[in-house]
Amino acid sequence: MNAPIRQSQADILNRLYDMKQKQIAQALQQGNSLRCQVLTAEAEAIFNALQSVR
Image (cartoon, rainbow, N blue to C red; front, side, top):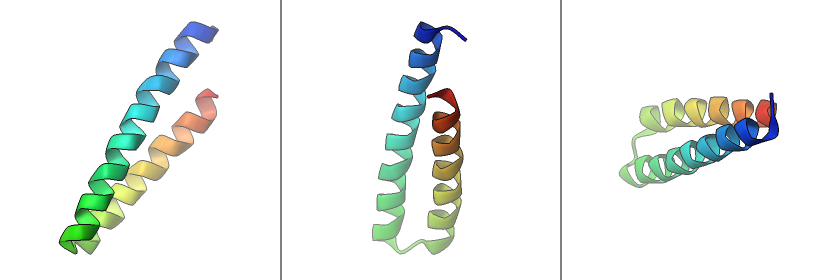
């Protein structure tokens, strides 16, 4: 894969990861532990995808 495409994918994944972190913080504030678990799993998947793009 060429560098511009990888960078574009990395940018998108970074934004998704940042949004997911904000959602986790909000769920923590609300005391919603099940939602926190789901969001954490999603954040982990995004993080792993980000690592494979780099």
